[in-house]
Image (tube, rainbow, N blue to C red; front, side, top):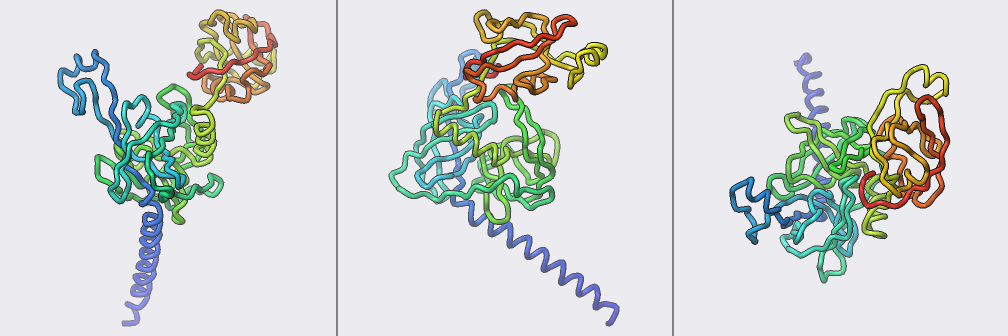
Length: 343
């Protein structure tokens, strides 16, 4: 009997720990689920796509197709956050709340470069259940997180896991890289897109956005600090303002002799393949075959570095641009213009 006592104590401890875990998941789900919504959209199907598919789309109109995703209410007056790829280009948007009520919605703004969008519910009710947004600085690897969404049409599905990694990078459909992405093993499936990733206190710490098909337990969410920044711009402008130079380029290694001679910070840069006539790059004197190595005093080792440097703060601002022309290092001044698309 005495030998059985330690095992009994361990079992009790395990049971207590399991109960605490279960309680944390249940508490988070109970707090957030009323704010999670199911988003249904109708998209126009291009005629060529209809011809290729040789089938009639499942939609109200003969040239429309339906899609669905998740989202969550983040203000009591009906603003909903979701993924850009869920609602971008939609002809109609309908939002269904957890209590079954269904409303039409309008797109406020979207940002394909971070795969985030805001829609607003056309509801007469002045106060709707809204989530509480957390902060990225409080997120830790190994921390319990809960994902809520509508995968494959199964409404308000709850999955739990941990934060697997922080600071990941993910390429958006626009081609730009999304930085500081949260990796989690909380199961996500098609339809979870746009739903919240929350901590044990029910605070949203990310927006679920992507999975790696064929992999298990590797899912991604846009970090909440990125979400806060993008949402503020979408509410103010309907888009995220970014600057552009007006050039096409590709990554290119730089010869070590040139790197050492000019004391460059990186051994690669962006080879300019084309320059748009009349663009900021053209006016600054950038030529084809130049290799950009710095913008605004920050090293540029790749196209991704160049995209990261082209934020809204550079629109209309004279900015130093350093490049290598043949073997000569040149310092130019460029004034980036505003663009609604990736450079």
